[in-house]
Length: 386
Image 1 (cartoon, rainbow, N blue to C red):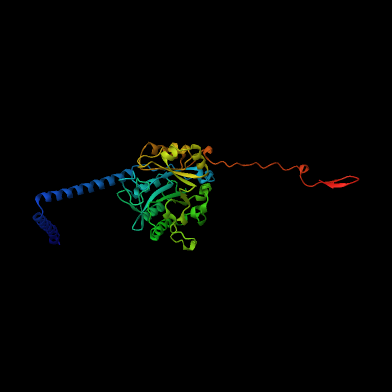
Image 2: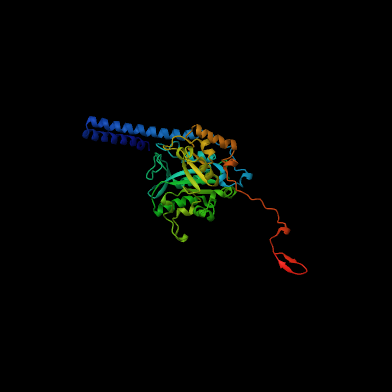
């Protein structure tokens, strides 16, 4: 046995020597030097790539878990969904910025542990398989700008595994925001997205909430109806969302729209770029009034390197103020502090930013003597009605 083990390295050495001799006989010394230089550079880049990736993952594990967050107080559960600021993480599998970076389950575990209850993802198509990546280009429907990608099915399984167990606020509603970054309308691709959504099982809302709540405003429903449930929110501006939907429900096996509870870019859920549509909004009052009755999700400005100013978006009543959870800057700290002080990922908006229905008081009972009913009058000489 020992002789066999000794023979293996000797055989490899002999093969390497033979290969070197054959190459050196056909390539000039200068060419051989260039080839070795290329190999050395590739090895260096691989080591740097692996080291950066490993360091990014390790840095995530140094962030404290938001153990102070609790589920929504029982007395607040009567309020509608639109009345809350909700802790929101954008592209929550990213280890940092959205370009020239990595996506990893470690990042997803981090945002769940931090108590984020709106998880946003960009979903791309790879050979009809939905994958999670990220891009700094809002209209990029073709490829991710991250060095790697994740299988969307595995992402959904991870959410299902941790968001309702190890999360500090595991009983709160969970919004899953999907931006389909593909024009792929193949039924295989759409069916696989649906299969991923179905991994949430009975945590999904009932059929009465399908098809964007039947065209109604989900934001007006009390949050108590969504405790421990998953709300599916999808950007419906992509025609792929409705491409597999037939007129008859029995032929809708590949209809993604059937599983959507809130349609982003719909009248009930606006998608806002921070600088253009929030900070420099054409009409402050119009935005505030919209957010009283409906909802908005706010995104940072391209190329998505800095988080939005949470307090600016907050004063306009925007409910889903999206943060890049691993881009640690002053804006992220302010956001985290707001929810930490509240000790909840659902913070009630102030009354002046919430819709206050006009209630007409019940009028006083009518005096029978003042009734407009027909009355009979009679004298000794005549009778009549008035």
